[in-house]
Image (cartoon, rainbow, N blue to C red; front, top):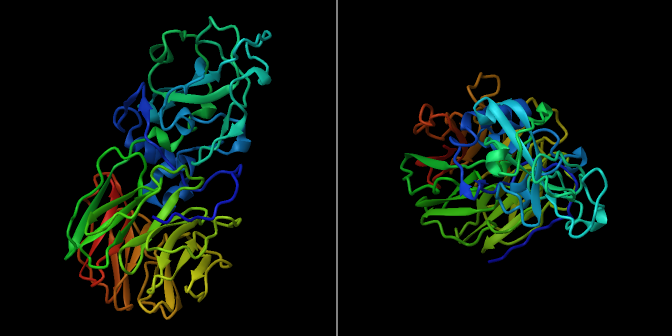
Length: 463
């Protein structure tokens, strides 16, 4: 395996896409139905960050860090963000107090509880505040990373005080446990003395959610399988093998799932990322692939070579897609503002980076010759560069849900779009072979991939 990426030092900023781990409640997995209802995920995403949600309807989770999620906000990170996905106090910390937000959509309109986990103080004493001197605490102040939840950890010196009142002194707050279960049921030392802070009602983290995905096949494309339920991170991209006999799925934590004749060449599933993965592209041989993150960091596996990245650059907009050249010796990256970045033998033919767009760019596809590419926006608008021919678009047509992905027909004279509701829009010589509309049961389409011969395609969904 080759693992190459260009990465800056940790930055104190809000990531554009969330990297998620799996939530656990009291040491056991929680489902969407039992903890955070799926409908609430979508509804809250629309409230918290409607543009981001509409850009990628299949990834409502990405908006669910909610407000005040950057390190500069002054709030404390969620425990699952800093405790390996576990929604409980990490070692060296203790529940020391709690508050609630009323009428939470996350908790079936009931209260949602936030429990502060404060660091221990060792043998140090403390004053009337109940918080020891920072130099006595067992942790150091820093910002969380690896997800959009980049809030403080071990920085805020405060104690509500309803839990473990036998402790005269605790350190700064390490993280917050979030639950629909009353704190006195979470920890018997917590009292029922209530505090309310409804301003925190939408504070969240992706690791508080479980995810699942399905793959729907159309035409000559065969269904080869789908990931197991209760994924620790959502699927963000699908790529077909050169034979059309399989596909890869990539999750936003860098996990890779292989089906049919898709070969596993490695993943980032156990790597702590500073910016989440947003797309996958394969090499011409099918023996390797690239993963690209929202900051433009590129990760290479199998025979995929590293040709550069934007991981160390300050971008005007986050990266949303990657497309390989026909030779496999280069690739393009596209940002949501239409900016195009070229590496290896990928040539620059133009971009929309300096043009005001009505809707953000959500994906791209290269032509068969490598001398052009298409960009597609959330409203179905198409932008053609190089020898990419215009075959039609959905711009100006009312869509039930925004476009989330595209695939090019093999001859380069057409393309497909997929919308968040699973609708397929075919242009040029791209044949319409069916759609997932009405089959998603409340889920959303995430991306699509076409067979290399154009006789079928797959739609990846969250389900």
